[in-house]
Length: 531
Image (tube, rainbow, N blue to C red; front, side, top):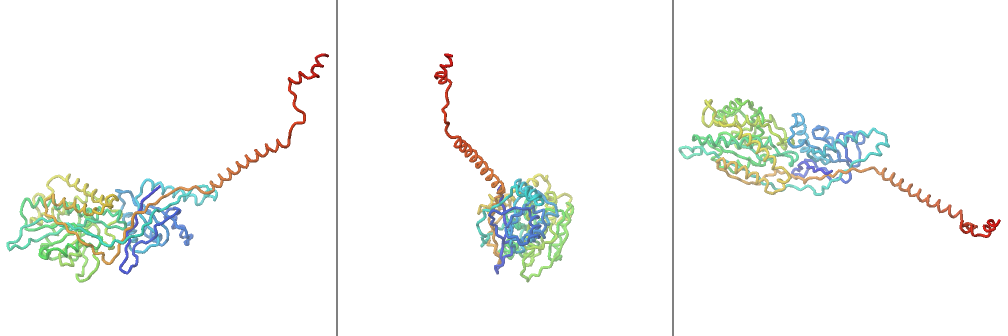
């Protein structure tokens, strides 16, 4: 049986100290067991010298157990649920804690992740059955077959020296002022990349995909709204890259944007995971600007009409401090712009863990409500209408939006499959598709590439690890077969030797045998007849 596993992202600080997992992935004929059994054995014999491969479902372990495994020198294979399987909140939160643990500390154990397949399920069942033999008699344990594993991994980790980012900006232009000044602008921001402890499984469908889909459909709805009447506001849609690298795409956009446009910006709303009916507006403070307050009031009331609660969460940001941002709006705040991030996450405590390995599904019903509320609230703000008699957006059916969401979710997840990732132009293909979508709607669009600032960290992503598992019979059967063959050969030898000994002992006959015909012709026979 063969399985393909993927290792977590590894990185080093400028001083060269390893922060991520760093264990050896090479295995040559190692035994297998479950991770739970390995933890029990470690308590009994903590100084075990031989290296093992332990396998378990990621949902069956907690962060404390994984931390104990990281202190060993063994190979740990954690099985993620099959693609599309939705985990409950407790399981998803625990896996997220495991991801944070993997990104926070150095490890002597080699950790890898794989999707649970039919073969992997059979392997787990077999390992659980094997553990039942531990309390069996020695002769029973001696007769059972056992499993061994090998890895074909040979390439060492390779540092990622440079990363190219791509940011897309689309515009709905409002009417300029009488003096030719730029119209006031509302900016929507979403990121099109994903980040998790294992980049191969970082689809980010909710954390990144929901915001991206929302931004794309907002552009469609507001474009139709702009066709009906001229508006004084401009709207910018920014699809940023490199959210994993401290939202470097947002920082690059601010740095290269015309200062006049930044001065004309009235509000920047960053979209994170918005596929929820309970959203948090992360903002540095309650702004007193009348236009910003009116915009937020319109959004809040429109979302509430759709059944979506929006609560404000303030966190002060020192503009002069150079700290890593937890949210994308912090870059805009340091640039002295009014900004906030709308997210389903009430708080974010980890810099590296933007999304999760379990982020491969989407709450479509909640996303539809959020998009309807954001589109209607923005349209009311632009038209300066508090409560219109009829809706300003989503006047038609929602079938087109359902198809739109499904197709973009599949495309967003597809960019992480091996066939797609192997292409050096994978990111360009995806961003080009986003650009074509905006241009087809009728928005003016521009694409900008930039070099990502690695932030004095050296990242590396190892290639996949192929794990081969084979079943081996104990040598007892070999010895038994050998003894049987030897006994059989010895028995044949004795039989042949015994037959030869009998012939030798009997020797040649002293009187020759007389045949009946010769006896009839003999003189004695004739004499008998005469008498």
